[in-house]
Length: 360
Image (tube, rainbow, N blue to C red; front, top):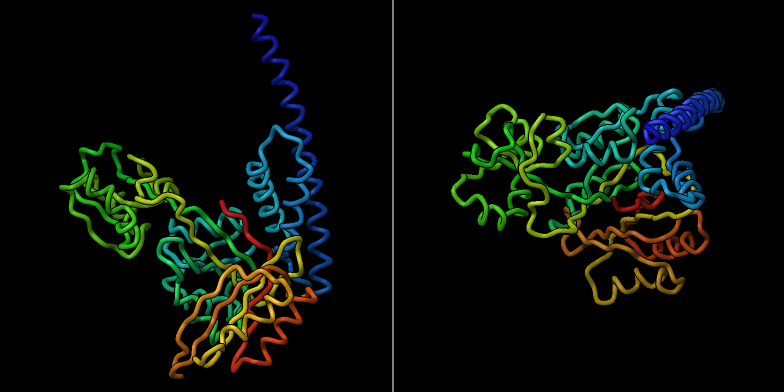
């Protein structure tokens, strides 16, 4: 009886704290609405990724615990998403369909209060942003097992769209079906890349079940939701969306599989606490050409985090390079290095400076 009394006392204190949180959330929302009015009058951008990065950094640095930092970020992700929708609801296009990893990355970055628009291919996402049909787009750029998404890189050659942010997300695959019983599975569906990533697991655990290719892991989940004898290799998120049971998690042959996504828009964000800059440039295929291109960065101690080459369409023996570096375009040494690079290139385009994304 004493224990029950103590529990009631603690619950009363928790209720009191919840009431205070509710009051403060509404006070915060009222201030956000006022900020939105000022932004509207001055024609400023409603969404500022650098401001969100600043908030996350300040809160996690000041967090004494025991509430974990990742949970704190998740809570404030939704607070900021809901608050922003009071100013101006965001519309975001992504490489669909629903329940893909790109859809999941969208929600991780923008929160649940944004409106998400699935598109059939990467070009459509770029087109939506360019035409102003949406505020932002989200597209995959690279995966630790499959490498670079060349179509995304190719789109930047002809598009004036900027990179506004990045999302790095662990990609984990599960076996899903309607009943939750592995004995009910007569056939398995998934995207070819997902099937390849689970090849050894399928060989060992499901050697008799035929495996069929479909256009996406989300399509596999939808198929499994309509046929109790079918299973899908897809994400846990797809299981939630299509009301499927998870038979086994993490069935991929190699763990630590991450995919990086880019948030694209019409303008690059302002400088944050920790930024990355992406550029694209072209050089002729001649001895020492790449060395000359990289020298401006090495001489200034600028860390290059990625370099990827692509043949330049219509120009034999010329290549386009996609380069990521630490720092913001407004940083003096980054700006100077890029000016020196541009003087030596046949083509150069600054794709954007944006807050670095933390892996999740």
